Image (cartoon, rainbow, N blue to C red; front, top):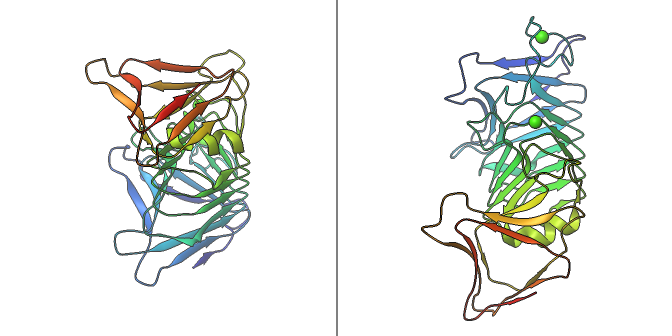
Length: 292
Ligand SMILES: [Ca+2]
Ligand SMILES: [Ca+2]
């Protein structure tokens, strides 16, 4: 179905008002692979446990939005919807979850804004697992967790702007990220990205990073992984370093492994700084190599 643009002065509101512990989604999914289409000028406000879930077990679905703002009930954009003076804040609502049964061609977000979601109980304001949606020319702002959390999926995220989220991107379980290009990653509350170390060439080469002026947290942060194919990491963006930190003590080394049947080589270029912490280590397997 297509929702019409709300009447003049109105927004759509989905608010649970009962805390954050148990996400309560509006689910878009079913045997006929339904698609919900939202039109330009639409504002969708959410609050607390409210979330949108695209696709469910055995129930594929899609969500298409062009020129749509997804924001907090407390955001005054489009009117004082909650009737109070309380300002919108990061984490006011949960997430839009593009699940494994989200239909790729039917999940497209263009010229959208996502603001004030990603409550701490979630992994991100937009969560993508296995699906391959397209998110283009959109502004992702003030998530309490990642702006976009990606696990195992290869979405297209193109020409988006990320600002003031806890992090812009959290990418896990991916060997490459070729669809994530042309994005502006501005300062965030923590390190701006935390990514599978195999995605470093794609993410660093194809996107623009802006360092924080206070000099803090300017790191491309890495997840533990095994690098099984040869790659060269670009020099980090100006003001940035690579960071691999486990933050959980020293008892059980957790390496980024470089090794595998293809005798992979990780090449690090002049001027690169790699910082490590606690259990973090690099292990060069007997069929791998590290050139720096
Ligand atoms: Ca208000
Ligand atoms: Ca923030």
